Image 1 (spheres, rainbow, N blue to C red):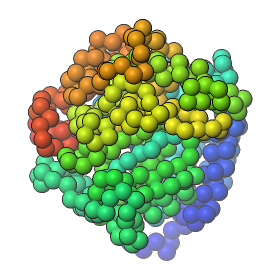
Image 2 (image 1 turned 180 degrees about the vertical axis):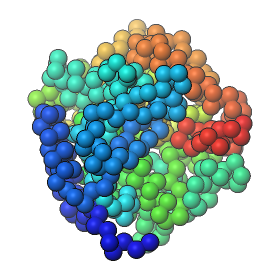
Image 3 (image 1 turned 90 degrees about the vertical axis):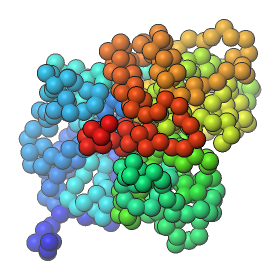
Image 4 (image 1 turned 180 degrees about the horizontal axis):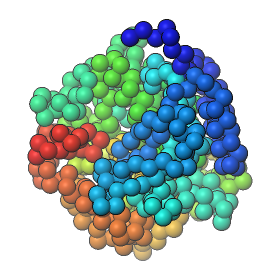
Length: 476
């Protein structure tokens, strides 16, 4: 179709980066919400080349959903946007389906037109219940409320940076066709740090990094990972809600770029048996008035007392929150000690089999790295349960807690059982949302063979929360 009569917004990557970094700075500086709202509505009104606004939100399991609103409609009705929540897994029942979307105007992004379409901008939404309160199953809202409360009460800023690994496979929609093919095909077998310039994996990584840069990610490094056809593209840390938003955008960008190349970017934790799985190492710290509260030059491993208390509480609640950090049947294949799997409930500066690692740091970079997080977990749930557990959880009286011989579950049924029995998980999510989440996990698990065995079964891909659709689910 001819586009010569159209005049939709399509900016250069440099222009996009400037706009996204300016919006990011406003968010970091906590500019008043009403001021940002005024700026965004004025921008949408004045910029005639925008046709639609894509509003993003995530369901209870972490799957990203997107609605496009006509710009002119949105400008008039941004404070009264409704959608059918009964169609979203983990949200409302059909009898009470209406939910609202509120705009988080600070979480506003400009995407490259060649991957997201011209004339569009993106903004994250907040799910609101019928009575006007934050919807309990919208974990992004829970995380944002928790972070804002801590900042107001203690002056704390919660910081996070994630190392998100994934695989690049041949063919579009490789995961959705797995039940037909029973295999994934690598695009590259070079291994760690090795990919020739111009090959498919390097081309994918380069292009993804360009899109991230344009969207204000402030990249640090990118490279092929240990397993064949595996990648990791790192970027700078951010305030906790923005960091979780960036995880959703990271995966969206990877999938968009891969699809344009006729390939599939997969974030299954262990799509291929016999090689390293994919993780999402989550680096966290707490700061106050610009000072890193996890840094103490005289502390053990230069980690402060607050930092070690944080570590001890995470280890105490490791089994309580394992299902939130490892949310799929497939994730428990990754917790295999033969492949550097972080399945041990202990902390160490060097042992990569530990759930928590204490990386070498300085006054600016000192942090705690939670390694037993799968890349398919709901990023808002991950951040929420790590920070809330680390700051407000209890500390076990287990002797030598940081080096005790304890392990995370090796299957999802044990993880579900631990989660359901835990009082702490009820305090985290409330009884209703906890029960919904456990029901969703069990529904997927029951569609898979109970024993993982020695090869990836079709159902653990087909009924995975990031892969399934109505058609696939009904094949059971």
